[in-house]
Image 1 (cartoon, helix red, strand yellow):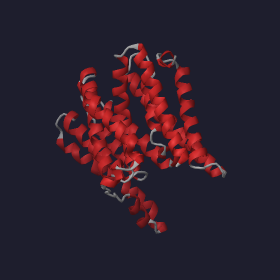
Image 2 (cartoon, helix red, strand yellow; image 1 turned 90 degrees about the horizontal axis):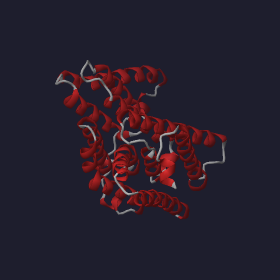
Image 3 (spheres, rainbow, N blue to C red; image 1 turned 135 degrees about the horizontal axis):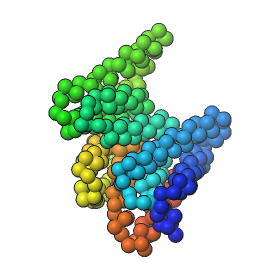
Image 4 (tube, rainbow, N blue to C red; image 1 turned 90 degrees about the vertical axis):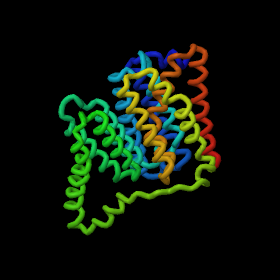
Length: 304
């Protein structure tokens, strides 16, 4: 039944999945985070929902342009489910904004015309990366993705490696021009503080279980699935995101946020590849199993 629902790319299926995602946002904000007492909290919930929908539309666009799935909506479904494994993203709108900016960076780098002059794409993504840093410190990882893209796809024009620094300088000049008259320059610098947090005890926390699940899926099937199925550029790009995501998870304080931001998309693509090559009964079982895991995570957050 669920497999039949997702086994198409009709717009009404996408709308239905978006409504499910919005429902998850408000369920968590109301019952887990108790964010429903003021109109400001309601507006923030609407804002989180809007950015989540934008994320879904970006991913759906990548899916359609790169043919990551064949005539189905599995990818969007997996992204929504895996996002629900990390409910903190429903709490803080800044995380969702950083996630949206990161997806825009992924898409722009993936579809940049590297046969021509791609400097504008590198500059634009550098600007977006600095802005994302305002909302989440380990959005810094996006710069490494830009430099990898320049090295691998930038026609060996190595001076383009300086472009991200130009983007950083441009944004900093604009931000300081705005904040210095109001004596807010110190507060601005604090927003760009990168905190390294590595503790083995953090990995023994029960809240880390969904992260371990995502990591195991990546370690077991991501590389094999992506190299086997897609064109070399797309495969490399998604695997680079995965590797950089692992680095962010190791050193960031909010490991669940880093997992959601950098591993959700490649993990979802891997699951699509695996599901499309499975029998119908197995497809149905996997889909319902992931929904059950999502419900278990919700129940766990509800009782703690």
